[in-house]
Image (cartoon, rainbow over all chains, first blue to last red; front, top):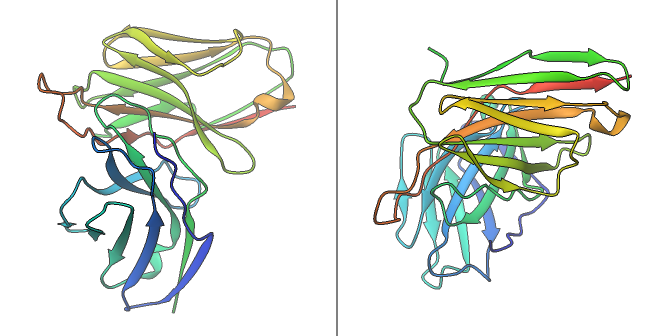
Length: 110
Length: 118
């Protein structure tokens, strides 16, 4: 699985958009980009995934560059409850285990 | 109606003991996993089972033995517990690939079991 690189931490003001970047320059053509988050000691929670196209769901939007070497997770209106560690993972999906990196610790500030 | 459940939530035990952690999923998924999150918060895969069969064992000591009595359960038995086994253990499940191999398969995680070995 391709390795991903994320900033270790970020801050975001409550109510503003949180933009979390991820580099995955070695991603292969059949690997998806997944985003998960882990809120203080809870189990990781799936947020969104994409292959080539930008994706949006009720939680977030995922913007993938045309060359697929990087992506950005957007939380449009961050709340205090979005404070968590966010993991960007490149993987083949299906029954392939996830390879977690260090993630980005997002702190949403009131 | 919890999707992936684990018991117990907390487990405190002495070195050398044998303990088990249970995991159940009611999502009808074919694949289940055990992950370990150590004190530095790194989350790593330990095992993966598909339809009760072991498909991945990531260089985990033989003291760790997963057991899958049926597709909905994946239990983790640990023999001769050591201090270094202290961690949070997460169970997860995901649907299998489609016949075309294209299903991304998000994983659903349980709440975790915090194991402390004294």
